[in-house]
Image (cartoon, rainbow, N blue to C red):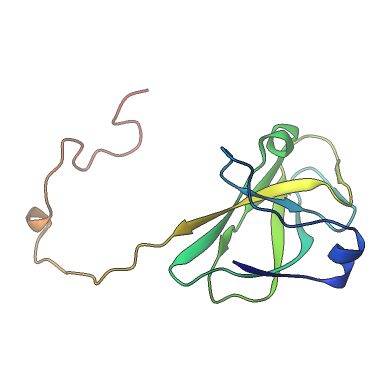
Length: 143
């Protein structure tokens, strides 16, 4: 994957490194300090521009330490054709104001293959293969 780090990110000395052995995601850092009020959203700058390979997608996900404080990621699909700055949309689900600091790890990026095969339309629902679960939805597989 090719990566451009903007001037602000480089001046902070923050590297974009592959995950450690056994880890799934790339750490994403904030390059700004900000406060997030309860129930509010904020777009956090990372200073990264990525060239995700064709056939892959970047998924921005919560870091457990940040999520346990009440900040959760939203809108986390990064397409391989996107070249703009990777920004992280966070929502504060806590009851108090939360602070984000420069250089703080705020999310993680998973880069995964994308399924892109031709679509085959069938004439009826009965033409889909059957499974043990079938059409069972929310809670149908037990608690």
